[in-house]
Image (cartoon, rainbow, N blue to C red; front, top):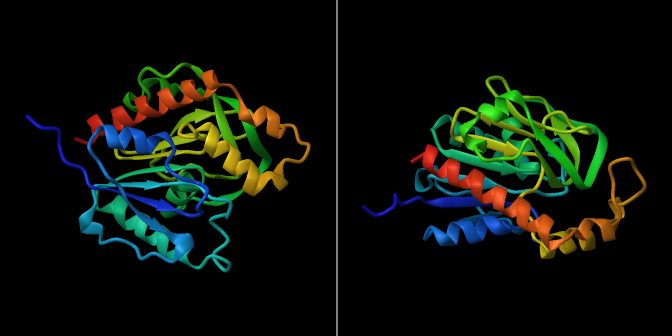
Length: 237
């Protein structure tokens, strides 16, 4: 029996933040995702044309709707996608947008978190089928200054010293990660090039050299990205 067909769409907010290894994972499953590039003025897709929505990151905040008026429409579109039973997965800003679509507050975190810092499973995370096979603690890549409250009905899956809500699920079709598992060395270089002004001294801000990390670190997080997506794929079949 052939694998189920999935129509994948993703939201891009800035040209220097792409899918990373998520694109490789999709290609291996015969999926060619379509994209809405908000930074280029693309239109939103027909909701009936997609099965999965992937919402990626960006330097703006959910509350920057005066500067980026498309954010309001995007949040409403995500809300409708969730309500209609689509699989919705978000990373960094994407997780914040999902939280906002579910009615949660998004706001500046107490500390900016930029660099390689550990996230750990909560008790709910240890029991979640979506994170089966994840280590208790994982050194993940971060680049964020905002956080969000856990949405009503959401389950906190992972946490860290600097940020309480690092990963959550809402039912078995909606997942948000505040941190990055998809990022590649090239993706980190692009972030440093475009957002390097944020690398000021702070308890949870590393230097550009530290951000580059090692190939083992990238391989580790990319593997866990694939594990999570595999579980989400099977769960939502």
